[in-house]
Image 1 (cartoon, rainbow, N blue to C red):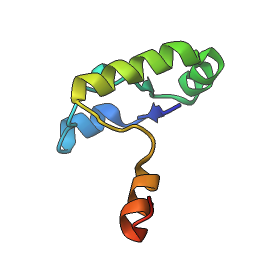
Image 2: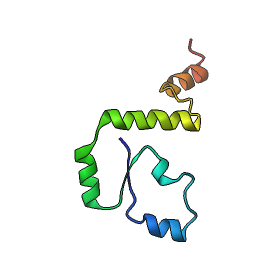
Image 3: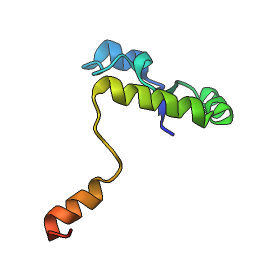
Length: 80
């Protein structure tokens, strides 16, 4: 799972370029402290996480199927 550890989020949002997505709309677990990180790890639920990832990928139009390396190998080496 991806856990976003963003202990400097407020500073980044106020003083830097911002983010491409609203961080709260991302399907990733967002934490700002070590205690929150520990709790997120302890409370991790694969089913909930996977549902969020799947929904997000549909929303952004991702066409990743997990076989990119195989397709590249076939293209480079003309393997059928």
